[in-house]
Image 1 (cartoon, rainbow, N blue to C red):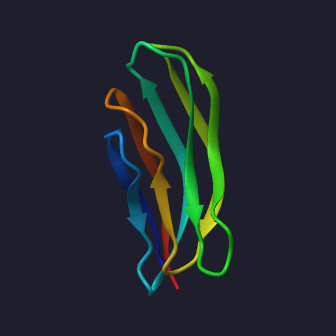
Image 2 (cartoon, one colour):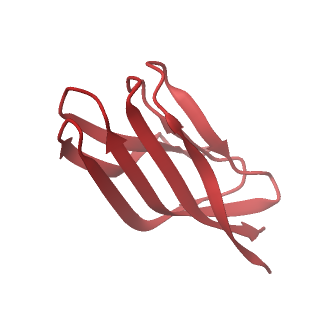
Image 3 (cartoon, helix red, strand yellow):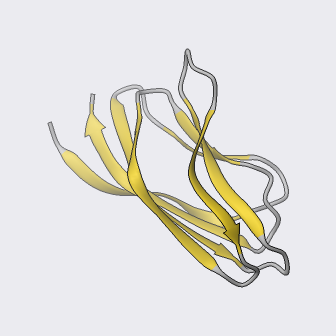
Length: 106
């Protein structure tokens, strides 16, 4: 089994919910690090959603009360089995996110 460090997604909010990454049917992903930059004029709570088949969507990588112009980092371990995805809620333009972790062959 090989382990790969992976840059899953990097981008900006669009005002609409976005699917950031979907795990291939032959892999398992582990989200290890999420970086947030709130380059808007308003304080906000930032988070991602894990969408695992057979389970209700779950919030993770929660950063409470990120100040306008501020940033936050989340580090942890969220396992996403094959065919799972992570999504970003409808954050406005000016909210930037980077998601990194590992990919395992299933």
